[in-house]
Length: 199
Image (tube, rainbow, N blue to C red; front, side, top):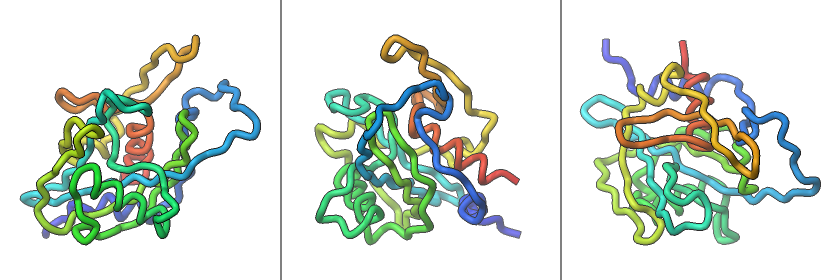
């Protein structure tokens, strides 16, 4: 019997889950009153390669204002020209990694995530329909790489680490893969997906 490599994703989408934030592991953080969160959409693109599900991620340019050099999903803020948050995620993925919207089957929407940079980020889970060769956007993306989905859906691979941020310890999830250090908002979203995808 052949097992659908996307079965854990569909299982996760069928289960209840809560929104997440960069403050989940830092409950003592005092958030400013009246803060305004800007909507952003990110694509979680999964491609089946030789029967194995792999998830595409980017390494952001070190010259960017927000999250320079970090591993991230392709995506960005929603523009007025975007029909909705899904359209924003698909547009950004096309711009950043050359993944055309027609080559993506949208599987579902994941829980929103609030970032320390005042974005409310909505992950869109999508299956890449046809073989995909990434084309990183010059100046925005240093590298595009894929990770076996099984690696990212194994909650035991996630650790909690910390850095000094604004004079205090800030704790966050991390899930390293080879030379890539996946942490922060990306790891938090993946951890929530891993928790929901479990047996």
